[in-house]
Length: 374
Image 1 (tube, rainbow, N blue to C red):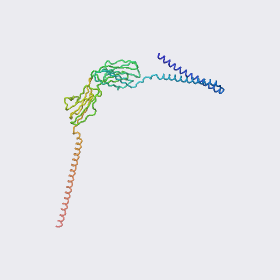
Image 2 (spheres, rainbow, N blue to C red):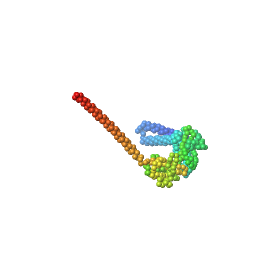
Image 3 (spheres, rainbow, N blue to C red):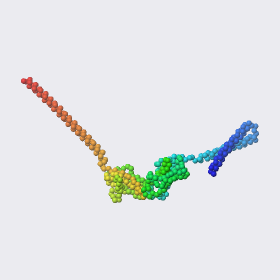
């Protein structure tokens, strides 16, 4: 029925255009013939004949205007009818659309995938208590579509048993869905919807406890000073906060109530931020501290690194420089003493040689004198 109406509309539009063109041609011909007759008759027309001619000319112009209007209207209808034709679906668009709806203790998460996409598509779901989850993936815009494809779900890279189904195409898309309830931290992880085609089309749903933020840069203090560490969980309020000291693979829980002179733990008014103050810090306090935000479904952990320095640390560069200066001065003094001693020895040797020469010269003179006297 709809096709018949469309065909009828198109035929009527075409006939409208044809009739408008025909009317324009006839009126233009009549106008040209009247104009030639008017030129031949000239001034011999009487007033009455002139009036009749003017009336005919006016009717001719009206007919021309009507034909133009009909042509424009009909043509615009045909053009508008052509522009309403929908364009074909573009393939391989690499687009996603993620929607989330939270109803009471249920979270509905939907990812719409258009075309073949990369496995980086991810939606993060933060869970703090037992929650019903409803995940779905919708695939559309494939280059080569079939009436049905196979789909299944993975958890942390492993296929979930009995999750493989045959998906029928509905309204140019394939819909894969899974529903389950998270009751403990063993059900947290990465859930992946997989459309088993070549190449595979996947999307990831990461179910986890909200992150806890510590401090990236280490805190530096000196022995005897107090150091304050802060952790926060942003928009989520945990049931409780726990601080601990990390010693290798072990975690020593800090009980601020049992040792108030050493530790002061504070939870801010909003509940999503906590601090730990360590007083009279020593070298043993250097290391990694952890803050755990504990929820009903599990916990997440942040870290703060602390470096406790002794007061000798700033003096070490000065002591090193002073030691180098002392060593350098000592070497210079030893060198000068050695040089002076060597010079004295040289001077003493010179004097001794001169004395010997003097004595030898004196002995030669005396013998000569004695010989002459004899």
